[in-house]
Amino acid sequence: MEASWQAIRTDPVIQAYYRKHMGKDVKKIIVKVAHKLLSRTLAVIKTEIPYEVGVIA
Image (tube, rainbow, N blue to C red):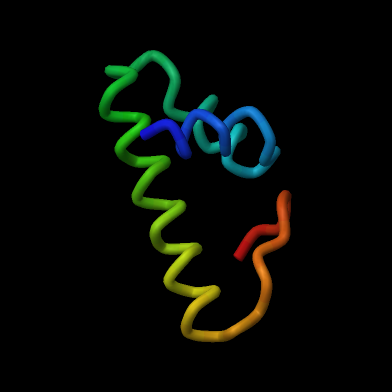
């Protein structure tokens, strides 16, 4: 979950995703962000294209 908070601080796309869901339970939003990060990680592994901060995948 710490990676989710770090992504929210550094990645504008993830930050916008977090803000879009604000007002809901914070723990549930962090789980959503973690799921998004996992999806991006799997995409990097499968495509072998490096992760770029701020790029919508």
